[in-house]
Length: 214
Image (cartoon, rainbow, N blue to C red; front, side, top):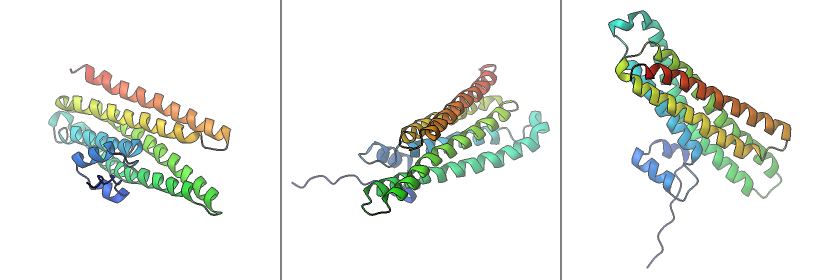
């Protein structure tokens, strides 16, 4: 009897085309991709998408006519954020692959390749964090003039966006320990911790508004 074939990780571009069922199966498999960073990107995309859904069921309502211009601007921003999160999902997988290849390098370029790969592994989750906080800011704005029937979805979007920040913080901290400059590594951890607190505050603001209607 032949041995079962080992699961192979999808490349970053293929990963974006997986169904929800296949993405979760790939995450469960004994492969490094998709991992926590890719999941964070997917969750961020869903956070933005839930915000968009809350918005489209608000647009055109007479009671929110005074907010039409703001709502149109939010629609553009949330759609853009959703697309950016999808790109960052792929970027995270690419950064991991780059780091894996750098550590296996056996020639004189190994140190430089490892440095660049480490920078990418930290930069992607920091970008995800910045984007998630931007989405949370937009969700706060939307919570002030949102179809009340969609407020639970808006709150769910906020919880997911905060989760992206927390997941990204884990990825930053696990990679910061490999940064040669101890001071720079400490700054990274502190900045990430501040962003976690900010994300929690924004999610809390949204939940306060939602609680008045539940």
